[in-house]
Amino acid sequence: MKTLFVLQRQPLREQEWLLDIFTAEQGRLSVVAGRSQPQPDLHQRYQGDWARAEDWPQLRGLRSLQTYSLRGANLYCGLYLAELLVRLLPRYEAQPELFLTYVRTLEGLQHPGLPDPWLRLFEYQLLQTLGYGFSWQQDREGRPVNASEFYRFIAREGFVRSDASVAPALRQPLFSGEYLLELGQGRAQRPQCWAAAKQVLRCALEDLLERPLISRELFQPGR
Image (cartoon, rainbow, N blue to C red; front, side, top):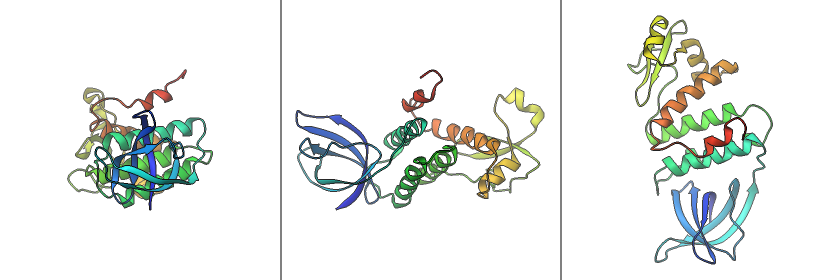
């Protein structure tokens, strides 16, 4: 029996669900669950197994181990995480470290408070897993980030030191080296640090996405 999360579900045939699931051992994969089993839902840790079939593997013995209670904006955050995994994670590749990060992120999102640290840490780990990681403490040339300098971020490359006076011409945000170092050293507490992290990681992820994320629309004002 394996531990798994349901990332996405859709009706398949009259008595079946097609599930996109996430496991530590095989990463992301699609399986079929019969309607006679517990109705699969997101943000629950399940135990189950699957067997080969003509089209998709058939899920067997699905049992809920834990439900993560996400409310309000944190529920939207959970949907965002699941969509990121569905859209970016390759199939059938073991992801034990990212799986643990996902578990910790869902655990953290259960509690009230700013969700940014949990989201940003997950996004950073996802990029590392996909092979597009970067260092908060070094520029793209491998030189240490200087707290008194400013940097712009280039997707798939990293940080480049820039003169603040040319920022308007570049039409790119500049990030304080001080904030980057705080993030890299795991001591970020100021909102400005997490705001910088959000901009950087969004740039890195959007470069990999072929189309905008549906779940991001939930965060728009007025929804």
